[in-house]
Image 1 (cartoon, rainbow, N blue to C red):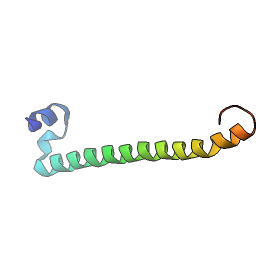
Image 2 (image 1 turned 135 degrees about the vertical axis):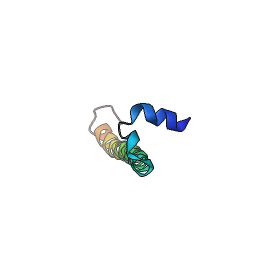
Image 3 (image 1 turned 90 degrees about the vertical axis):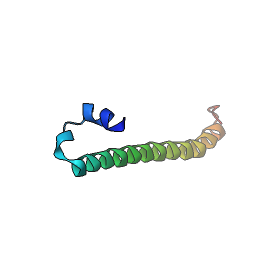
Length: 64
């Protein structure tokens, strides 16, 4: 089942089991790195907004 999914999309399917395993590992590591980057950006934005909104409220801009 899983091998059929990768066989249709992977142009390196004929390169052997080691190449397939390496490509699968690279795909998983890439997805994890992307997810961690999205999470880090979200957390950074949340902390920044939490810091800035009270300051804007004190300034009378009505956001706090």
